[in-house]
Length: 201
Image (cartoon, rainbow, N blue to C red; front, side, top):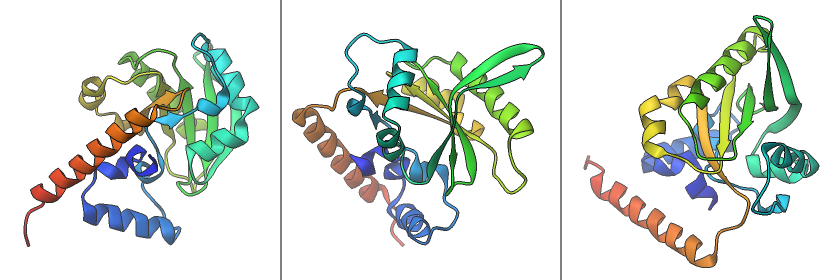
């Protein structure tokens, strides 16, 4: 599922080849080359009923596996990173740094499906990080909102990618073989449609 879970799977074949070449040469890469959707968190061992704190506790307990699931270059910075804005306290669930992207990456954990108001919350966090934590040689921070479900049209209308925000689902149980096979067939069909739509030179 790695290819399918990367945003590059939705790009043209030429763009995919370019991005993979950049990644192999360890040059500066675009966030969508490294960020996945969904994240498979079955190793956390969560049951059907849990709170955001339970999810966060489980991630910290299994940090090595979580870092491997996040992808290349991630390092842990903080848990419940406190931001003080106008005498109000805010907390970023998890804060990471990505060595390949040269950026801080804030992660917010949500139990339910994505909601539009999560965008403004994350934008506030990213702007604070850019103002107070970003080093001169770093790029602007990125945000990942990890939700139990996604609402694709809302995400597209909000144009989150322009804000440096990535919304991804997480799965606490590995999908069944049948589901994985269906996803594979969908990916193959999507690739065929892209090839047919590609203009001839």
